Image (cartoon, rainbow, N blue to C red; front, side, top):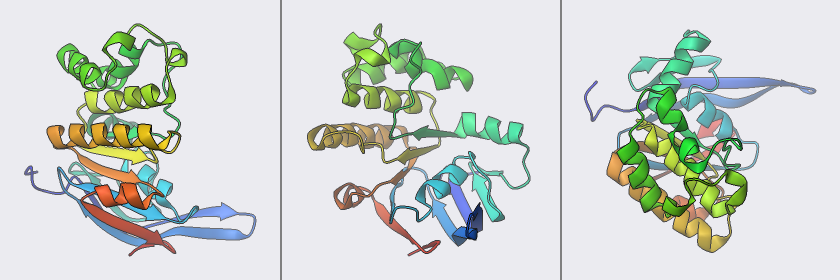
Length: 223
C-alpha cells in the first residue's frame, strides 16, 4: 500500500454481545478510514462501544459483520495467531491503567513490545526516554514511579515498536489536569514525528478538541 492509503478501514462493522436481557448490539454498520499522521478523537457516552471499536481496530477483538483492514491486512477470517502477528507489527495500545509489567525495569518495559515485534532500537529507546523525562528512571521499577511517569513509560513502549496505528483508551484518565495536559502534549509531538495514525478514546471535550478530527459514537453508529 502507498503511504497515503488509510492505515485503518472499517466497512460495515457490527458487533454484538450477549447480556442477561438478550443480545446487545454495540456497533451497527460502522464505516471509518484513518490515514497516516491523522489524529482522531472518539467520543461517546459510557457503554456506547468506544472501547469495543478500539479493540477491533487493534486486532484485539473481531467484528461480527463487515470488514476491517489494518495496515493493508484484511482481519476478517484471520486466525488468532495471524491477528496477533499483525497486532504486534502494526498497532500499539496505550491503556488508561498503564498495564506496565511490574517485574521489568522501566527500560525493559519501554523495549518490551519493540522486542516482540523484532524492532528493538536502543537509540530510539534512549531518545524516547530523554524526550519523556525518563532518562533517570530507567533502572527503576513501575511501582517507584508516579502515575504521570508510568503513563509516559506506556507511551514510550507503544512508540518504540514503531506502529502504523496507535490506539489510546482514555490515556490521561487517571492523571491530574496539569499532568494530563503535559502527557497529551508529549504524545501528540511523538505521533507527529513518527507519522503514525492516532485513534484516541476520550470523554474530555478539551482533549478531543486537540485532535485533527472528532468522531462521536452514538447508538452504535458514528456521527
